[in-house]
Length: 254
Image 1: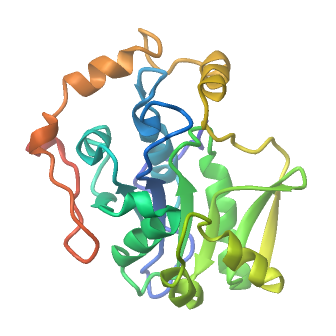
Image 2: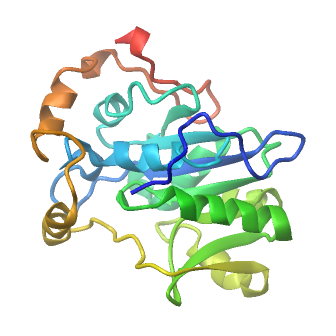
């Protein structure tokens, strides 16, 4: 699903080599699904791990995953993905998506050229699309860059550092949609000749995802339950709240 590069790639868009940060939103309670979406098994791994791996396979300089509901389990699902990935806890996840955006932004070095917001329930995101957005931002300096999948706007969305103050003022569950609508002339669209990655919001959407997914490991989708069970006990996983040091899941802390 992702591009060929590994997590060791250098960032494409830089300001004094400080790069662009990715923020993955994975804090919500998944009311419509009835199960915790980031932990749903897919191809032998938790769903959120696929999103994180796609982000790390791109030119993003770092990736921050914002967790909230069942934060320790979701953080445990990200163990072993490398030093470029960090986890930050949003204890106010019930207040809506904008709170997770603010939590992620608070964990980012404000010298970053931009942040890119990814949804934690879109495991079909392609790292090549991330890189095209990075390249578009580097070439144009646009305040906002987003993909257009055969004419349909989608995710992820890149926000230049000049937009950080506006992101920090967002409230409610609308996320950054209002900001994008308010600044149409600031948005650069990157055309992608593919279908948009689909949200996994309902049991039917999850079943359809499993049906079209080629399992990444032997054992099928249910193997991710064993994956979680054999990694760090959830009570020992540490996350950080916004403004504190970011927790970096690491194998040596299992």
